[in-house]
Length: 264
Image (tube, rainbow, N blue to C red; front, side, top):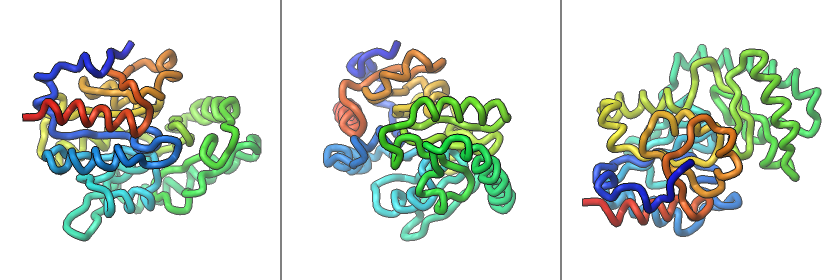
């Protein structure tokens, strides 16, 4: 099981220069961005620590993040696209050829819509029109109360069909074959920040809250779960190494405070 955050060695924290983090229910708390979290993002930037959200959220939402938040870029749609802010311009970098990914997304959407007919409680996410590579199914955002049983049933069905489907805290995200948060994270760190993965394992800390963060927990030795990941810990194969006391964005702020106290 994860250790308490205070067990994360201070000497290890001195090497951290990048924080990769999920967004929904990791930076947010009950759907809002807490003041403490926003302050933490600015303090990390001022300390020279680059923050990169890694989200299943749509490219349209991620474009806003990249423009208005103090972040070094946004990995969006579960790894389908990386948004790179450069001066006042946002550059979009797709994991594979953009045209091919758009074509494949249309095929995924048709498959998902055919299955959703059998799950009337569930629906396409309201932001589906602003997605460029994946398909998102809402089970706990607009759908209230959350439809957890239906989510699990549809998730199993999509996986039986061979689809790359994962659950976040609010959506089922259906990505294209080979697309994953960790695949794009490796690409971004090596190509845009010139890190070897050996360096990344020392300089990157990852923060998340849900099963779709599992590949990132497996990749990065310095991984942290915010407290609201607790219900998922018994079902994950790869756990975060450490756990905050607080939930969501308040847990992220707790991590930022701990990290910044031990920077050179």
